[in-house]
Length: 216
Ligand SMILES: NC(=O)c1ccc[n+]([C@@H]2O[C@H](COP(=O)([O-])OP(=O)(O)OC[C@H]3O[C@@H](n4cnc5c(N)ncnc54)[C@H](OP(=O)(O)O)[C@@H]3O)[C@@H](O)[C@H]2O)c1
Image (cartoon, rainbow, N blue to C red):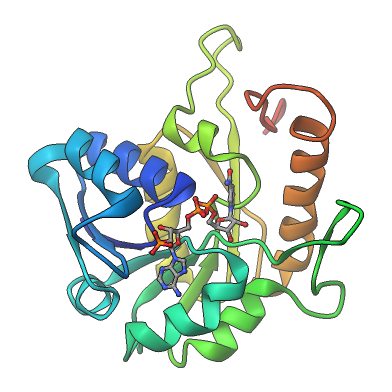
């Protein structure tokens, strides 16, 4: 599949490399295609990737990964242009860091970042996914000593066809995809990201741990 990735930082770069390795063509949509964070993943992927402006990337693919910092989301969605009927995979987390360094979500409980993304991205089929782990696990999802277990990739959304595509992409890069329901389930998946960050970065563990399902 041809996949546009808006933002080529930690998450966009890691997903781009993993998806390219799985046989997909990656179009990074960035503010300055000629320089910055896009260059290392572009160089590593080679012929299976290109970098263009945000509107050009969004225009040229039917599947778009949104991987910008939360405060940039309204601008990035606006720059993408007409998103009607496109699959928009929301990897963002509405993180907020207060003056004392404590971490929280800037919205949630009665709504979620994904629902806000859906409100801004008129007509797009939004699927929340690739938000509950650090990018290290997107770059390489293999846990060779885990007795055959794969890390789960929770996702949610209101459009079955879009969720089917995201399910396939998650499986392509080594996850066990788990459909958690409608887009409102992002109200649970975004706090799960906060839990992961608190345990790993703030809790002194390294980034290489994930959730796994022990029974079917
Ligand atoms: N870091 C993680 O492990 C992780 C894991 C799961 C989810 N997330 C979420 O994923 C998102 C991205 O995180 P990250 O760590 O990848 O961030 P990052 O490394 O800072 O990369 C952000 C990317 O977004 C681009 N960007 C910024 N403002 C933009 C705009 N207005 N329009 C288009 N592109 C813009 C940046 O491009 P420029 O070079 O032009 O600034 C950069 O390529 C965040 O919402 C985060 O909460 C992060």
